[in-house]
Length: 329
Image 1 (spheres, rainbow, N blue to C red):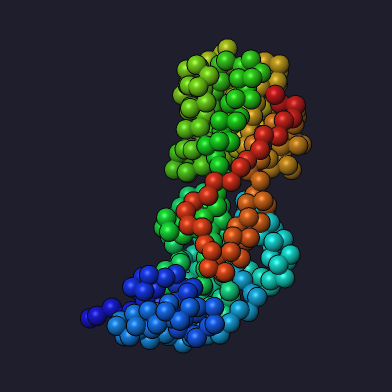
Image 2 (image 1 turned 90 degrees about the vertical axis):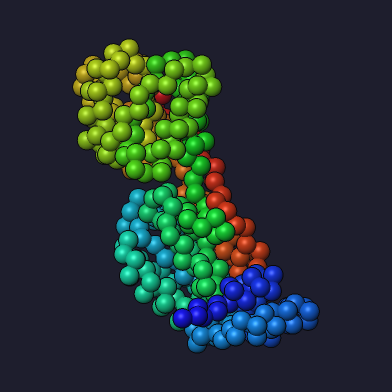
């Protein structure tokens, strides 16, 4: 059975973007005559027929965008969405929020719903920095991925720079004169944990220090407490610990203090995420890496505006993170 041609096929054959092909097929004035003719010839050659949903999408901008998430109640999705909503509000765009709850069937339902509402574009907010399946192909509207990148390099994705964040944490500890630095982090199945461990090892090597073993575990305070016993048993002379999350760091600090270690005099501790409800209220308050998730969401939204105008910037864009110094170092 012959595959039905899509607008992406037409755009590829004509050598133009999907947005330009859509405008040409809809008779928009922004397309040059020779470009329009090339697109029409490609559509005829491929026997392309827009489906009803695609036809509705060619009816002009609605100044409405979709925000599709799997993490509406999670730690990371909410600040990303708040930043995106700020940018959309400034651009006078209405936002339709859909929570797929990590369910692919529910996600497909919401995609169809958003297309039926003729949104001008969609932001997909991930629940982790692990790559996720692309939804962009043949959708007919621009898509930008925030926090969780698309697995398609031709898509536009924005993620925090965890490699640089972990390097910054280690450099801070080295600058303080710490030389025996351990790393306690989450599960190795997470991209974030692997990148933070990789960045930490590189920064230790750059400082002429021998990277020690990485302690992998859960993203929890309980694991931080358990890891404290393991780290102090493995090296009683440890003088600093970089933790892969604030939850792990808070647990580590609690258990280390119970074992008579002073924070930061005996052991300096750096966390990750700048979860203020935890980091600022710990005893002592935690030095940590802030991934600036609201800025990431706002930037993703601004780039969706550009993609709607046909100025997409494909690839995975790493966003700057920031060291927040508190009493734990």
